[in-house]
Every structure is written in C-alpha cells, then in structure tokens.
Amino acid sequence: MLKSLLSLFLKPNCSLCDRSADDILCKDCQRQIKSCQFKNPRQFWQGEHPLFAWGEYGGQLKRAIATLKYDKHPELGTYLGQWIGETWIKLPPSFSPKKISVVPIPIHAEKLKQRGFNQADLIAEGFSHMTGYPLIKNGLERIKKTEAMFGLNPTEREKNIKNAFKIGQGLQKPSSLPVLLLDDIYTSGQTVKEAAKTLRSHGVQVLGVVALSTPKLVN
Ligand SMILES: [Zn+2]
Image 1 (cartoon, rainbow, N blue to C red):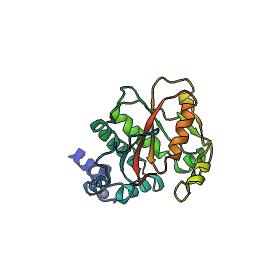
Image 2: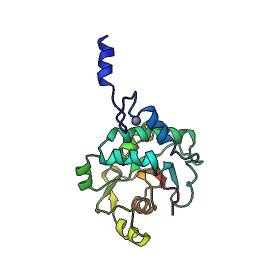
Image 3: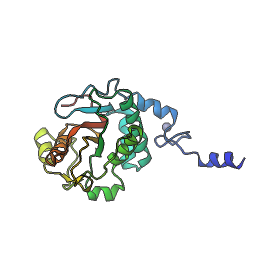
Image 4: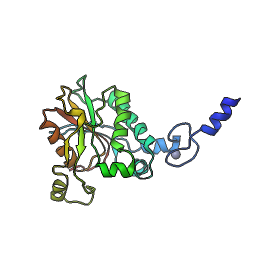
C-alpha cells in the first residue's frame, strides 16, 4: 500500500510534455521522436569520417535536444544515448571491431560551467551502457570558445573550429583502442574532422562518429 502510494508520488512526468509517464518520456513523445529515426543509420558510414546517425535533426528530436541542453534535462541525454546504443547493436556498421572506446566531443569549460553538463557526455554514457564500449569522457579537451556552426559558411566553419581541441587527460597515455567520437548533432562534419585530426596526431585511431541527429542533407 505504502509502496504503491509512494510510486504514485514518485512517478516522473515526461521530460518533454510534462504529462505523467512511466518512463523519462511518455509513450506519445517516444513515438514522435522515433518518427525522426533513420531507417538506415549506416547510410553515411563511408569516407574518411564515417557517420552513424540515429535520426533526422528536426521535429520532436530537435525539440528533445533543445530541452536537454537549454531546459536542463540531462536525463534525456542518457535516455536517448541508450536508444542509439540499441540501434547500433541491431544495425552495426560492417567493420564492427570488438574493442572500441567512445570519446564525446567536448564543450568549452566556460559553457560546461554555465550548462552544468556536456550533452555529448550524457548521450555517450547511455550509448556505452548499451554497447559495453568503455567511455573516455575526457579524451579530448576544447580549448577554444567556438560559435555555433549553424549560420556559418564553410570557410567560417573551418576557421571557427580550427585548433579548437587538444588531447585530454583520458588519452594522455597512448591507447590501443580505436575511438568512436560521439556528438549530439552532426552538421557539416568540420567539428568531427578537427577532433579526429587532434586524436590522430596523437596516434589514436578514429573509426568514425556516432551522432544522435543530423540534418538530412549533410555536406
Ligand atoms: Zn511526453
């Protein structure tokens, strides 16, 4: 009796629509976000920086990412990260080496202080939890304050992100494990390119990037 009463009070509301829910998200929001999911998350897994993208950046997925970051709902990050992990297990890219480590794209220390968390860390936690891949949270450090990539042209983007990273404490010692980068939104690929460059210059093998979302037309 007490237990059921307690569970009634402790029942969380949906992080997106605030209606009562059995999980982080109510069934309705889950369904709406899943409607943004790519049928083939491996469609961009090619070239020098292969991309595994869970869903299209738009609709409720876009809203969920904004809620996670700006309305401070960190629980959404780990939750959606688990969804990516489930998809990865079901539809892994063809190479699929057994041992991989996961390195989230870091945000600048000032932004971290402001926001309280790095959304990529949280998504990576959920992803690592599902896949069992070890997570190296501080594999990279962001040493340059960059502008949001949206609204910048390709040249500005390149300049904006140039030399933005340095190797973090987690990868000071040479690692034999190949790395998967992880980010919330993949836009032009410049961020990933720059992060991969930093890792490779320290002898770290970079397999590609896992992103929660990407606009349909990636350039
Ligand atoms: Zn909801």
